[in-house]
Image 1: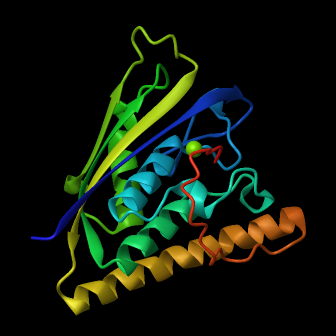
Image 2 (image 1 turned 135 degrees about the vertical axis):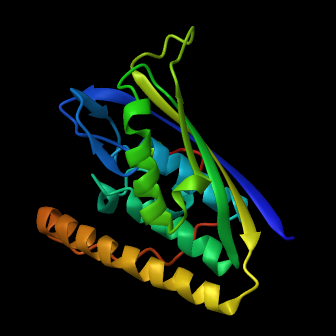
Length: 207
Ligand code: MG
């Protein structure tokens, strides 16, 4: 069996007055995560894990830090790009395991909702998605959220399965277009889809 493994990590500081989004869902909490995009620390770690599994760079490779087009962007755009990359390389996700490290809010009560959201975004069975959480004991990082994500990929042998993966990506692309139009309303310009890859691995990531 042709397998690949990928790991991603990200961190964002909490900030008052910002909506909190983790794992693609909105969470009722007094503070959100600061970032150039929507600050979804879990989707960023997952995006890096998927890109890393097919050696396609990292989130900063495709979405340069500070690019005005991605200001407040929905991080599902980044995840969708990573899905396209693994499909292009001929792989599908077998399972994913993630750990969130944060003092608040408690993740256990909403882990099921996050798993279901990720299952929709990735077209996976919920049972193949693990979301764990720990508090940052002894780290002095109670005002920071960190996410670790590990994914296992396997080579797709059946061309029909590859077609169904494409259908999922088209659905995600529709969502992406909706977000682009929202961004255009705010900024007055329509962001163009990123097609040019930067070869360097950009480790500076403020997405
Ligand atoms: Mg990030």
